[in-house]
Length: 23
Image 1 (cartoon, rainbow, N blue to C red):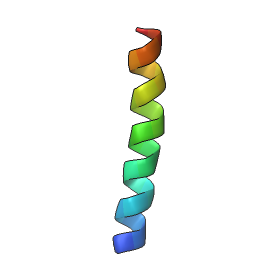
Image 2 (cartoon, one colour):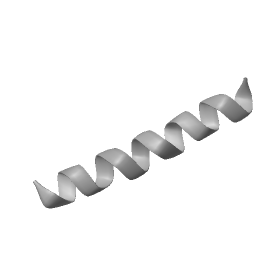
Image 3 (spheres, rainbow, N blue to C red):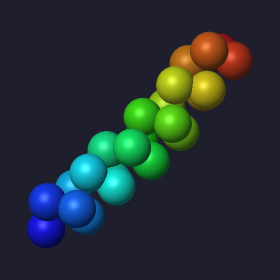
Image 4 (tube, helix red, strand yellow):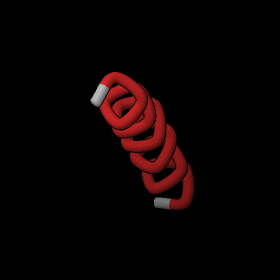
């Protein structure tokens, strides 16, 4: 569960960061 949460956070971070940078 900890690993799944870590992966989800990483994905959200990498996905949201570029979107905010582009926007």
